[in-house]
Amino acid sequence: MNALASLAALVAPLEPAAFFARYYEKEPVHLPRGLPEADPPLLTHDALLAALGGLPALPEGLVAFPEQVGVADLGALLADPRSLRDYLDAGHPLVWNRARGVSPAIDALASSLAEALGAHVWPNVYATGTAGTPFSMHFDSHEVLAVHCAGHKEWTISALRVDRPLDAAAMEPAVRQAQVARRAEAEARPLLRFTVGPGDVVYVPRGQFHNAVASAGRSLHVTFGIRQLTGLDVIELLGREALADPLFREFLPPAAADPDGAQAAAWLAQVAARLRDELAGDGLPRALAAARAHLVRRSGPPSAIGG
Image 1 (tube, rainbow, N blue to C red):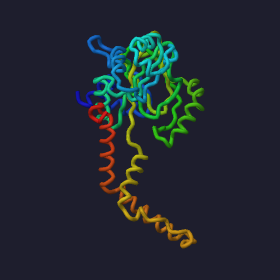
Image 2 (image 1 turned 120 degrees about the horizontal axis):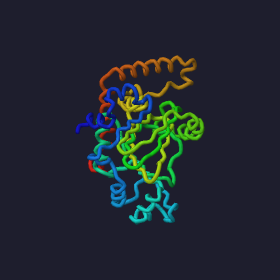
Image 3 (image 1 turned 30 degrees about the horizontal axis):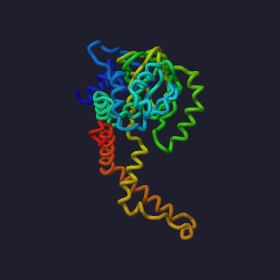
Image 4 (image 1 turned 135 degrees about the horizontal axis):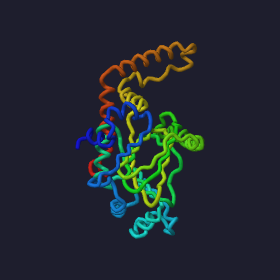
């Protein structure tokens, strides 16, 4: 299945054009499709346990709470398959952020979505139960497509949406503040409430507060985080391109030699004119195409990008 067909299958029964026109970056949607008996789920608990058991080392994005079952630490929990299964069977949460190599099907879908969207796409695995949830009401700073795999989960999506947050270091303080300061408001303004089962898909735009809680027993879903190029990326690429031009490496005229600021104003006018030339030229589109291709390559399976 090619990339566009994979995307179409994921957002069915919507056509991709309708999905992008009405929902993508605009509003959340639940696609209650169900899983045909003949189709295997994207991930099973047994497959997750097998993948975790084969890890050479603890991945940075793995989050669990071994102390809840009397295990010393996460490494000890993963080292004992029986303890790990008991932990999940008891309904305790396990999250594997940026899960690489968890299954060929997940790696293939991440790659296909990346190619179709021209984006960096990564999978996050959420194995949760009624013993606790790893997150309260929150928002993500990237687009989210969630594929439900096992059990059932109750989703609440708030009407409150923070305007276009980014997964960027410079925005981290503002994002953390908004997560805390506006959580109560988000909880008081529900927009959608629904229960998902195996095969269902949920799309949540970045900045939209949401939460998902297992209804009963164990629950498993995989979200695909989506990060595309932004205007800030254009500015960064433009800065790299500008390094080759001596004008952009000139100093601002010294204040003592330019008491009325006339030289600085003339210099700034030159810089602005040169920036317009850079924006109108073909160098920036080539750099953007290369940056987009890099995002797509980063979304490939570990073997394709060096682990």
